Length: 233
Image 1: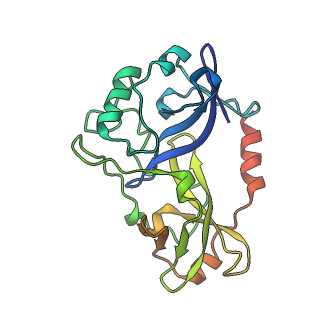
Image 2: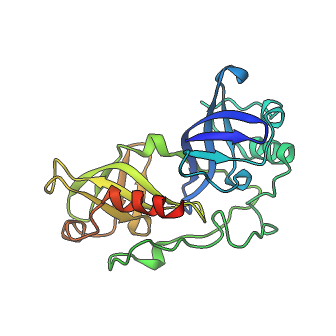
């Protein structure tokens, strides 16, 4: 999708950065055009206005000058809290961390609502803790997590091929798992609430359910989500 400032085009959304403690999207990573030398910039969901689903664009309440004058962050390095504080001060965003943030429960302050009913969700696995100002930030890339291998309590069953995100709360709700080489080739939805542990260094996701539970879980049907998108127009 493209991203549109109040005075012109910013660039294209490449991926998201999410917080690995509560699966909340914290930034859209936007690849700018030649006007900013093709640099990638971080934009918080707080800047988003109503999405234009037909034109596949995210309008934001920012000017191109604001984006151009943002604090520079080297995207290949760890995004520290100090980097975030500088960004939030520049854009006058209200910080999502700490006890002072209150914005109707958005952006990681409440657990997400599933799109579908599935019996394998374990509510006690959902964490909604908010980091203090002194905590290390745990930002992960949706692009990098794609391809991670999924291990159930009794077997390896597939790999992450996509993610489903709630565009109101900006939580990741589901991993889309491709089981092609394991249990029949279908793609299934696994809610993040059943994730027991992610071994980031080994690109492995451990889920606290059995292989049989995965076999009976919700099949991913992209047309369902496309229809949801059309119904927004």
